[in-house]
Amino acid sequence: MSSESRLKGRSLLIGAVPLFSLTLAVCLLLIFSLSLMSLVYRSALVPYVDNHFGKYAPYINLLAAAAILFSVIGAYAALKTGSDRYMLKKAENVHAGAKDIFYYFSPRNFFSLLSVSTRLFMIRLCVFLFLNIPTVLCALLLLSLSSSRFSAAVSAVLAAGCVAFFLSSIWFYMKLTSSLFLARYYFIKGEYLNFRHLTASSQNAMKGNIKSLCRLKLSFIGWFLLCILIVPSGYVWGYYRQTLAAGACEIMKLQ
Image 1 (cartoon, rainbow, N blue to C red):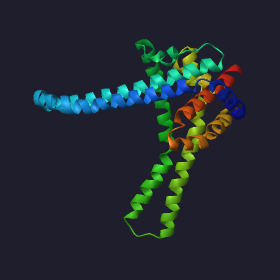
Image 2: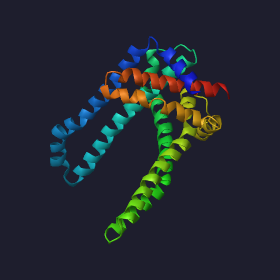
Image 3: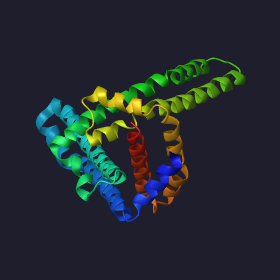
Image 4: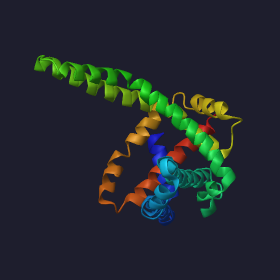
């Protein structure tokens, strides 16, 4: 899956690099612009709220902060999923245009995306927290013993245990959540009855393909390191997302 998907992703990327780079630039600019709303609110509206709403001012400020954060996350999710929609259609040899990138900015599509994305995020969060229980317990034990005198060997063993538990949790997290990889692509295609059917379809399709997906993602580590130079970020982002879409397309064809 890794080599074939990368070759297909690279071929589909030909001629589309300017569009992907522009999409990434728009995404970053939109997030930056929305982030400036917090400065505008703080300088222009906070004094007014504090003077006119008294003890309720902290709650109003908190709601405003939550609304700004929601706007930033929502804009990013809409652009990212719209880009995946564009790339998936290209991988399926279906006509795709710039309108697909902004498809989830319509209210109906946005709230549908918000519903699915929130539930997928909660599943991943619960899995992450559950897998990190041993890491937290080990860290708490290390902290509790730090107040008493104990050997450096015990401290080193506990510290090594924390690191080992954490790395193991990350590995198992990647393995478990990879079963939900196709959920966003089934959502984009609209091939699901409800959220349970969406996740079940993804898990069934990913049986036997999880290792291949992990290898595919890890094969981009070198490319991501190149992004330290900033210049190739648009190409690498488009190459990575297009390759994932090509891989998802290949897996869904087998079902």
